[in-house]
Structures are given as C-alpha cells and as structure tokens.
Image (cartoon, rainbow, N blue to C red; front, side, top):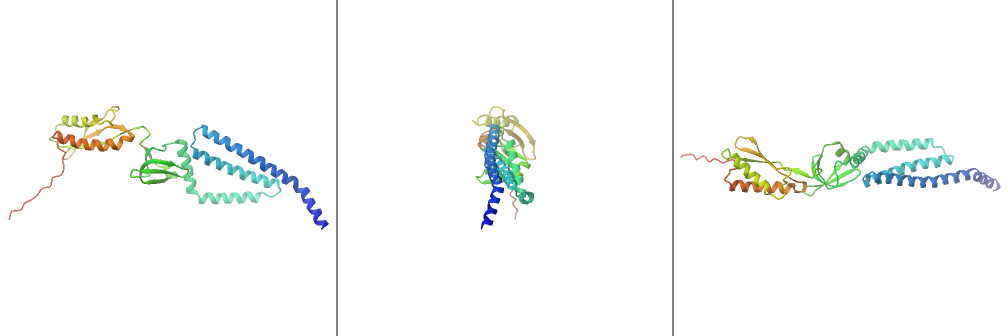
Length: 268
C-alpha cells in the first residue's frame, strides 16, 4: 500500500504543475478566443457584411481556434501531438472531399453576400428560373416564382452562372410588338399607339416611350412599342397596354391582320 501511495505522490508532484498550467492555458485561451470572435464580428458588421455571413465566419473562426487551443493544451500535458495532428488532418481531408459540393455552395454564398449582385426583394433570372429573392442563405438562395412557387438554387451554381437583375435599376422597358394591315396609315397608327402609352398613368414620361416601325412582315406592318415603367408596375403596364391597344386600334378602324379560313365549295 505504501508503495502505491508513494507512486501516486510522485505522479501528483510530476503532473500537477502540467495540469494546472494546461487548465490555465485553456481558460485564458477560451477568453481570448471569445474576444477575437467579437472583434471580427464587429469589423464585419462595420463593413456591412451580411449578418448570416458574420455568424458563419464567427463560428468557423471559433472552431478553428478552439482546435488549436486543444492541441496546445494536450501538448502541455506531455501527450504526443504529432499523430493526433495527423489524424485531424486526414479527417479534414476526407471531410473536404465528401463535402466538395457543399463547400462550393458555401463559397458561392460568401461571394453573393460580399459582392451583392442582388438583394432580398429583387426580381432576378438565373439558372433558367425567374423569381423574387426571398432569402439568401449560406448554401442556397430561395426565390418566389411568378406563380408563387418556392425555387431553391444552390449558391455554387448561382454565383458561377449568368444573373439578370430586373430590379437593380428601378425601372424597366416593356417590349411589345403590334402588327397592322398594310392598308393602315402609318402616321395614324403611330399616333393611336402613342396615345395609348401616354394616357396610361403608370407609363413613365422619362424615359420617353417610343413607337417605331420595326418590320415589314409578310402580312403586316409591325410596330415596336416601348413604354417605360417602374419595376413593380411591369406586368400591369404589359397587360394594360396590350388590351388598350386592341381597343384603340378597333376604334380607329385599323385592322390587325389574322389568318382567314377559306371555305371551298365543290359543285355537284
């Protein structure tokens, strides 16, 4: 018994300073890590980085620093850390290979949040989809489609593809084409079409709407009608101008060509 007591005393004498030092390093290290994370988040906030990205970077930095702190504490206790570090490295490599797609999406999300090609509420077209940006997350971006569908696009593909932002300029041009008969008077037709545009309350006066002959087609003279409106009024102007143009052309006696069916009567 005395032999075991002596051995325990020797172990306590040998390892107590190391354990106390390791605990002190752990406590002080955690305190310093918290200060670093708060400082980084404050810097990111001042630079206008998205709150989601701030949290993610804070968590990522926190875990990285804590892993380094744990390795330091283990080394202070006298445990060999070479093999331990090798295991962590191998695990990190395996995890990175398994999560290649997720890492690409994370990188894409970071790029979107930093460079801000669009923001929540913008109408965009990307990856063959059109919708209003509902939410920008680390790995995906959510859109609300024109028919109220939820569209989820991976950020990796989104950041590497073409993005059309219909909302960034605040105004949009509505591109319409109307065809009239070759018998119609061009000046009268242009006046009728322009009157439809200028009388609509949501068509902007600046930029000025335009009406021009765009094509002499096989059976019609086509007019390019180009009103401007606020982005949120696009579809209202599109549908109203289309309807009002038909009414105005009919009232002016200007024919819109359409295919006529021909009936052939055979004589008995």
